[in-house]
Amino acid sequence: MRNNTLNKRTLVLGLETSCDETAVSVVADGEHILSNVVASQMEVHQRFGGVVPEVASRRHVENITLVIQEALDQAEVKLNEITAIAVTQGPGLVGALLIGVSAAKALSFSTGIPLIPVHHIAGHIYANHLIQPLSFPLVALVVSGGHTELIYMKDHMQFERLGRTRDDAAGEAYDKVARLLQLPYPGGPQVEKLAQRGKPSYSLPRAWLEEGSFDFSFSGLKSAVMNTIHNATQRGEEIYSADLAASFQAAVIEVLVEKSLAAVKARGVNQLLLAGGVSANKALRSALTSRTNTTDVCLRLPPLSLCTDNAAMIAAAGTFAYQGGHRADFTLNANANLPLINEEAAE
Ligand code: KG4
Ligand code: ZN
Image (cartoon, rainbow, N blue to C red; front, side):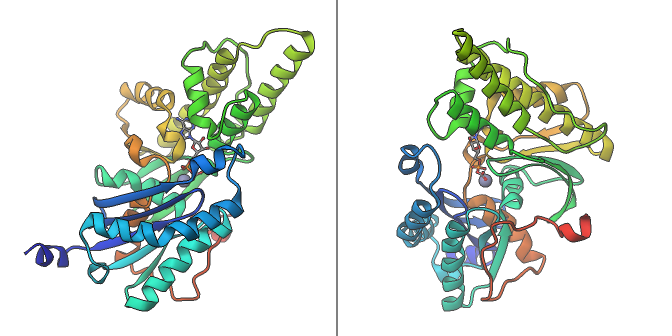
């Protein structure tokens, strides 16, 4: 009986190995998570103060088959019941991506199940679909360790980039500032925790860029934090690190929130969606919430469990790619710089 019901559903096995999480998930009909297994390597990389690509790849090799099996077992689904295999093709660490792509190709080759390449950022956006169906048109603010982008979507799997960071991504800035403040990896949550105890009393720059630009820049802010620490040290003054963390966070969030609202207005949409690892930041979530409360903009925040890298989001995006007819053959290769849209056509 259960199998008969399952057979009518689109069951997508998602694989995500773009950075330091080996993740596999089974998602039904693009919205029901049947399993979502994440083998985190955080502890391994912590002692190096950041992700070591070679170590990440080796860990993925060790974990991937076990995690695939675990995801199928938890979902109570057999491999031959799977409709499609979705895998993160990029962007990310090429050696890490390759493990997921090779595993997905091998599974697809041995079973005949279609292989679906997924862009990591599309995955982050579709994490929201696992909570409530996306409604279009929308603007997505994607903030992760590798990306800070404003994306306009008029329909499923149609992405138009409105702006992106010209240097550091927001998460990357958090991680670098964490290192300056001698906080452990991964830095984002640590800076947030420290900031909760401080006041934004340091004056730090906001990079608004040219009038009307939806691009971002965070490297100047990071340098300003570095200079503040350096100057105080030279003068023998004390650094109030909680206040500095709060000041840094206030500067990042103000720019993210204002540019997102401006993009929503410019495109005349009323759906604003947050995505990517930095969406876990409570100060960002509450700033967006209070800024949109008095407008007719409907704000969609991913649950904390789906903010950072996972494979349910890849399976969800993969379902729409599958339904849209996207397929890969066995020449599929990992692409560390995979564009979300046809960037040549867009530029
Ligand atoms: O999306 P994600 O898991 O991986 C990438 O695709 O990059 O994002 C990881 C990034 C890291 O830079 C991490 O420091 C940041 O998200 N991050 C946070 C928080 N949680 C994760 N940044 C600020 N506040 C947080 N609570
Ligand atoms: Zn990510």
